[in-house]
Length: 422
Ligand code: EPU
Image (cartoon, rainbow, N blue to C red; front, top):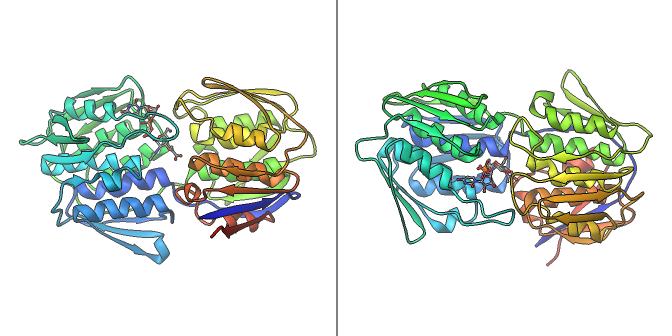
């Protein structure tokens, strides 16, 4: 198993290219199941989660070809011969549940393993299932699998979410494109990844209005065609690398970055004393000579502060001047990075969904371990500004969501390497 070794060093300078969004790509790929014509995705990130989705789609009979070193994915679902998403693949990645809506909409049947819990929370899929029921699907839970059927096809209906779930909105949106009649999704998630999915579905011939707002209206069509679509920028990778100069000092330009993807996050950086400016090619982040100011952060669905940047923001606030309070409102168990940061000298008190961080002048390098993707990168960020060496174990979490992390950070002057622990 590999580890990442980081040694604290001075300011960072240079440019970091930001990849296409993992969480957009993971919902765009299953959209292939809605059509028998080719779907081409440009600007795909090179990540293990994308390989897992490739494996899942292939197990159903889809063709997935990786071109240009993985940055282009050519997908085709003209010969789907299996409508069962097996536990062995689904258990590796919760986003596998996103094949349920498309399979059911196109074929009137689907069997998908329940994903189970994960490190950051229980994460049930009840909202996905209720949305499909509102479109006329019959669902049965048997032997750990959801058996879904809609023999005459799905019918438009009203889906009223009591929480704006990202994945459930995506499943409902994809399913509704081929349902008969009109579907209205109320309290829909508004994340940029949803807007990106809607853009792609429209290019395939879907009739969708209101994506990006909390009410999406879909007029079902008989069939969808092919499309070529460019995946939206990964706002979480963007925010993560914006924090590198914020923590270490210096000035880094994030190529492809846009403020509107991360407004709430940029406001918090500003309050902490970090300057973000728009450039021709993206965003530039500078930390002046002053201290980081403590700020309070509450995670919320978009356009609020993203839960996927909470761990990384905590790494910044560990050395802020004063006390910051971080409230995690999306996942019930997403502070597992806190005890690891404390091993590096951070002062953090976690009570339920609230973490109180009292800034210390400097963190100290230590061997640490990550239990999820965003936690692992927060430990790398913390290590970049710590005294001495930090060894982050269980790097496979990182490979799920960050491509070339060592190359991207060493490219701006960070002292970071990947080592094999054999
Ligand atoms: N929830 C339910 N029932 C459901 C669905 C969700 O109770 O049927 C709960 C979850 O347990 C959670 C909350 O609702 O507490 C939010 O879940 P949501 O469905 O919005 O999240 P998701 O679709 O499972 C996506 C991202 C996550 C990101 C969240 C929130 C993908 C593949 N994953 O997950 O990304 O944290 O939205 O923004 O799009 C990551 O990239 O590190 C990551 C975890």
